[in-house]
Length: 151
Image (cartoon, rainbow, N blue to C red):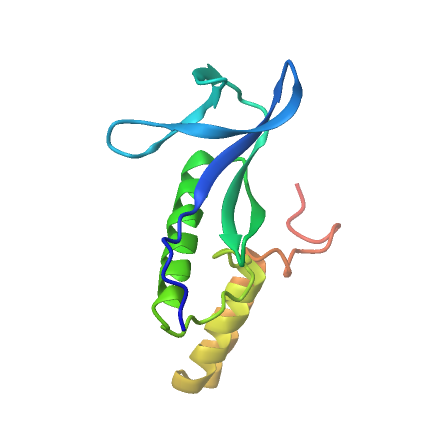
């Protein structure tokens, strides 16, 4: 039987207060967006540029906290994604696991993937030209020192 309780994900920021490091709720603007670096300390908004944002939710009665970085907008997006994931699990919808790269792709991986796809559709000479250009772009085809035009 699915868990029918509401699946809420809180966004907090761990900041330095007079009582030490604390997890404080973030301040939201009237349109629901996170106000960067503003947190509630003892019920009052304070500016704290230090610290990282955390997602907080419950699984089987246990509180789970996950660091999501120092950028407020990225943290808000991660909160929405996690809330959607928990709602899907609550409604018995299969969730495809995240591949762990947090939505970021390295230039080298993007170049390799593009060249694999290009190999299937382009002629060998075109592929060779693309490979040379992209390897230079990715920093792999740098010209050795001491070679080049003389001045």
